[in-house]
Amino acid sequence: MIVIYTKEISPRLSYTLNHVFYQQLGLSFEIVHDKTKLQNIALPIINYSDEMIENSLQIVPEDLLFQNTIEFWDMTFDANHQIGLLEHSENPKLSFDLLAAIFYLISRYEEYLFIENDEHNRFDVENSSLLKSECLNLPLVDIWIDDFKQCLIAHFSLDKSIFKTKKFEVFPTIDIDSLFAFKGKSIGRQFGGILKNLFQLQLSLLTNRLKVLFTSQKDPFDNFDQQLSMWQTYQLRAQYFFHVGPYGKFDKNISNKHPYLKVVIDKIKTNGHDIGIHPSYQSNSDTIKIKSEIDTLHYLTQLPTHSSRQHYLRFTLPYTYRALINNGIQKEFSMGYASTTGFRAGTASNFYWYDLEKNESTNLEVLPFCMMDVAFKNGMELTIDESIEYSENIIKVLKDYQLPFRFIIHNESLSNLNGWKGWQRLFMTWLDKSK
Image 1 (cartoon, rainbow, N blue to C red):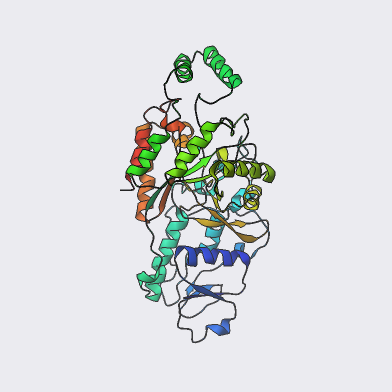
Image 2: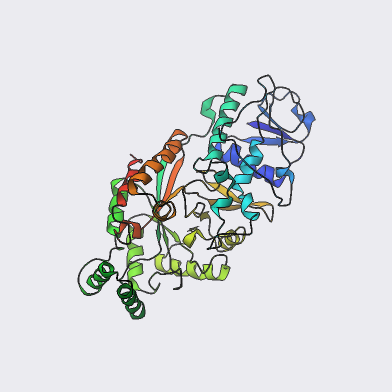
């Protein structure tokens, strides 16, 4: 048990303390705002105030956790990444407000401050305080919490065994934007695809298309047996997200009424993998459209749908998350960037979403990812070898701090089509980390 003294108890502070102490460190805690109750307490005391309290560990607070409004905060982070103690005495204090910094990152505070988003109306990574501080590829929140744990152990002579045990694990997630490259599409879409291949002189693509349509050649995106073999080899349980929304400019899957879709979904389900909704580009924050797509997936799976990842990672806070909550989503997997690697919320660990506008915590669990196939090939324009080397550095940090490694691939990126030839080598190096 840890005692936390503060002059004021606020929703933001309670949320942050719960994340740090209970969810991440595995410690129970009590918040005290009456200083007289601290007398004769033998338990470790965290002093979250500007007062002096004997034998405590002090964190001098900023105003952020005691506010009810959203205001501009100019946040930058120490490139050394470590928590320091300003005073090595009986009453040391941390070098910065750890709790406010963690709240700022995992609440996605900065995403409420910027009006200008990217071309898909997503928060632009160029506005990320972590990117500007050159910390985006570090799970900074997790590193801080581990440093803080070492401070607690050293200052209060705590036994390491009382803390939550963490473990490095590999969690593959797969987005199925388009079930097939050529097969299963309407006559109009097939004809349009043939004309496009002709006019753009995509003769190899046209040949592949015609072979799939008129011979026994397998569709290149139909690599689901290969995927299932991969998960079985590495004894991993994968998380799938299926796009079942209507056709549109950025929504290119086959019809959700096509029998092929149910055949593949049944195959994934039968092999024990998890299936969630991949809400369409069109749905974004539209509660009614999201409900319609969840209902469709429920019909196809005959299972409740509790997990989601937005198509194109297109979400707007707080509206998209509220719409998901209203539709029974409990786990959300969109927290990351499409154009680059890194930890959008500064953490690899799961956390519960805090609705800043309502100033309240929610039961929506956010599961961040740090790497996506498209980010390496298209966003960062790296070669396969460069991508392997680049990802190794991030994975090393995850291993050092015993954190989950969650990544995104697509059936398209396993197809050898559209520039993806050979990229499976990168993904296999990721899976090898699970051994």
